[in-house]
Image (tube, rainbow, N blue to C red; front, side, top):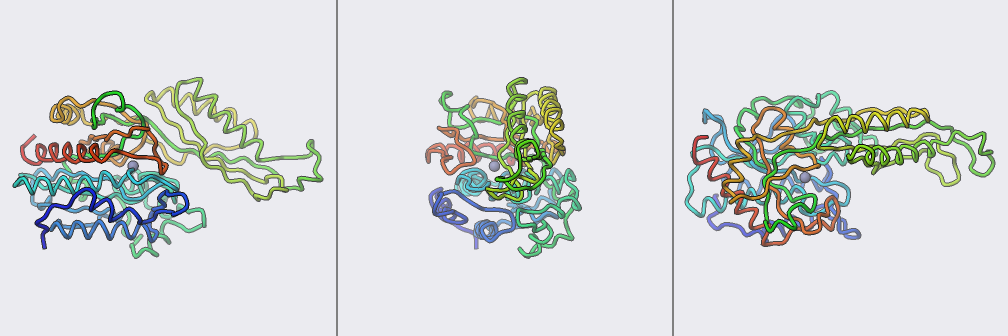
Length: 405
Ligand SMILES: [Zn+2]
């Protein structure tokens, strides 16, 4: 049955507010193929069914819901949406704001009596944050062929569970994983609405901005070897302490980022055996590095690598996404439609960037975030700004789906 009464932002928002929320930290733990992720997917399919949208899954299990049939449209459809998973102790807005806004934009267009000339799609990309298996945007990377199924399925979470096992446990079929040109061909353009992850909009007097690109960024694993021994009996000169090399890696990242005007962060460390009174036998540090300037980023990485290899560590690339420029014409069209909303790029990766690099014309809409807090429960957008985001998305979708480009 198709819903006749449009839902309010508050209705949709409160329905998912408690899913995967840790009551002690207030943060969200919605990791791919876990029970909370499954609940979010069920919520999504329920909302799509309530709107009479046709729900499909691609070869990675990304959920696509269509208003109109993209396969019978010569030009494909116009898609929007985002992701519903989270980082560890993430905020409520990163991801879900784009999905909720997409559903509400459809409600708004229907209430206004709008009939799309081209199908409109809403997507929920799986495993965007890479919180569980370490590779961000796994959902879009697999269907675009950037991440091979073999590599994806062999990735392991902190408990040693492979992605293949996690998918199977969630009732998904890992065998079907692979590039999905058919699913991508349905998308003639993709607009992802997202909470801003910084303070670019605070002083600009605008609730929304148009995103025109994503900085080059990637993740590296730095493994430092050592030798386990007793912390109370082993002389300092006799030690091979992996924690020291790991600490040097953290400092090297900071120094190189300062030298080249880039960003480099070690936010995750695993020290083994992990006893207070044991010298570390190995240490793994994960490095995240980003920059608007790709050569500067490469220089940053070269400096870090030179530094860490001196302590016997090896640095391995886990993911790399080149500088992504969104579709110029699309960005200009959005800026015009949104009354000259500011245009800005971001240091955060998104599925929109992966699609853009695969040749899908893409752009983003950012919603103001007063403190700029991101990937923490403190992340927030004012209710009126969220509504302005819905309005902006409805305006853009109406234009893209209502007229030929
Ligand atoms: Zn996000």
